[in-house]
Length: 323
Image 1 (cartoon, rainbow, N blue to C red):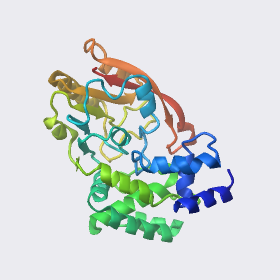
Image 2: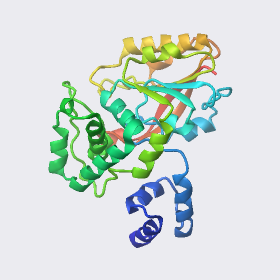
Image 3: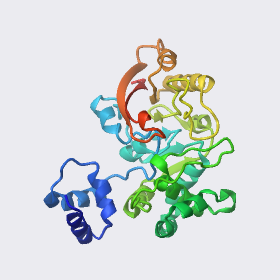
């Protein structure tokens, strides 16, 4: 489809052509005749993650459904509560759209961004439009060096999304001092302000609590019939895999074993529990021999976001469920 055709349809829909291009990236050879109707239908559907996120599950949700791994049979999103302690991009939450949910993450800037979208999405959109108008490598570096302790929550959220949308390969990476250190991507026309989707995310978060705290505290409220999805920092597949966390704290053997124990505690409470992790000997052994109800499944995930091209492509992961 030519750029001229896309611009014509975008004009009719009163949207930016970039919105259509992003929308079309999830479709196979859609015709111009069907694009307008499909986009209108899309606007009324579920929101998608507002941030690119390493390990995000947007492309895996349908595979989970096809394999009957998700959602758990018996979970009622209208009455029970959904918990996602390592929410990241939130693809599972945005697909499920439960009536009540607790989301949490150890990444303070991410949690602030969720809460700003929930509380005042219009103010956020206004600031993102400023970032969009000024976007350049020099501007990116200036924003990257800002001291977030001196910024309002709305400014922190706008900065977070701007850097995420314009940084190299959509990475969120911090150095040992906790400072964002991803270089500028120099992409043409990055989608910095996805206004339609941000408003849908805002609506989805209305009855949701988003917390910045240790995941164990969030789960104190989990009870029988609730659904918990764990998507923790993955255990490294080899010694060179240093990108195991989106905060400066690590998440290695001790933390993975603690998470396994919490998984089993929730299982005993009668909760539906689902966990994703790397397909390594350590993780497979960690969740083996725990009883007939604890099942280890294998899925293939696409890794489009990585600091190295060799790290992108299909990779096998484990999905552990207790139902």
